[in-house]
Image 1 (cartoon, rainbow, N blue to C red):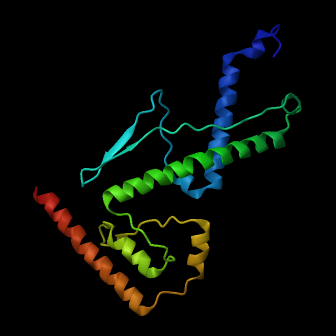
Image 2: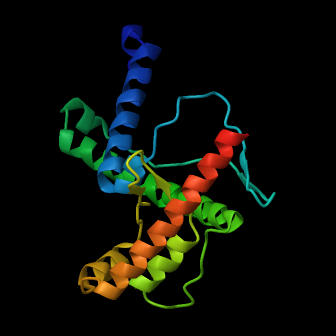
Amino acid sequence: MNSRNPIFILPEYSRAQFQFFSDAVRRMMAAKDELYGSIPVAEPSEVLPVTQNTMPSGEVVQNQPLQMKATVVFQWDDIRTCNLEALAEQVNNAAEERLAQVMPHFFDVFHRTCDAAGTGADAGGRPFSFELYLEGLERMELRFDREGKPEMPTLIVAPSIAEHLRSLPPITPAQQKALDELIERKRTEFNARRRHRKLR
């Protein structure tokens, strides 16, 4: 910057540039990773607290704040010529770097929380199958809407497993019967919990 022209070094310019770039990176991350895009954006805060959740078992799951870093390099010639392709490349690179940091952290928190809640399961090297899916549902508390329809959990898997799922054959009548019976048991449990809450 030219120190003889202080109008061009106002802090408002730097803040606007930072905000624009941050918004662009966040939107690029959401476009690249559907799961990340589904995570609610937290309100800005000057304090990054340590979060913790107490499971029904009494176990406490504690999570430290995650500091994300990304390398951004702006060339003066690109700025001078308003090179939007160079800007888009920087946004893309920063989004890739941040996703490589935040998503492993997310799955680590998710894994530890599920284990503490007793809903985690080890497949023991078995490939994903309908039976494995039922085992997972068996460990979960399903919720039901006012019409009694189950609110089924979202299945989040790696791309390789997603490809494997697409290759699986349609479920058989016996598998559908097992799923229906499981859902009916879960509906009975859900209604019993709801009645218990109303009586308290």
